[in-house]
Amino acid sequence: MRNSGDTDGAIAEINVTPLVDVMLVLLIIFIVTAPMITPQAMKISLPQTDALAQRDQVKNEVLVIFKDGSMKYKGSNTSEAELKAFMVADGKMPHYQLQVQADEAVPYGRVAQVMALAQAAGLHKLTFVTIPRQ
Image (cartoon, rainbow, N blue to C red):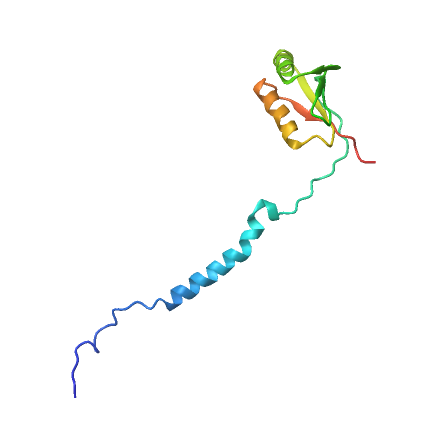
């Protein structure tokens, strides 16, 4: 009979099988849920609202953005540089509000440029005019 001293002591090895099982389950859960988290996978529908009456007494000026990206401000065609100068001057008036009437075919990038231009000019009130659904 052999008498070995290591059979009576504790096992010095760590059993990693349960750890691997848990990690694989977490990996599978992550792989399944990751596409649901990304914005491209989210299907959103924007809310529809009724026309609301304006509560504030404001000085409204209308900026029209056409399909081709050209703009008309206060009834005359204008460039970005002229528009910024007008916005800086008009933005100093109390209760000033810029109303943007953009054609639905205008790319979002063009509207974002106009919004950035208004922000750089110091405008605080900017509204987008739409036609209410009937």
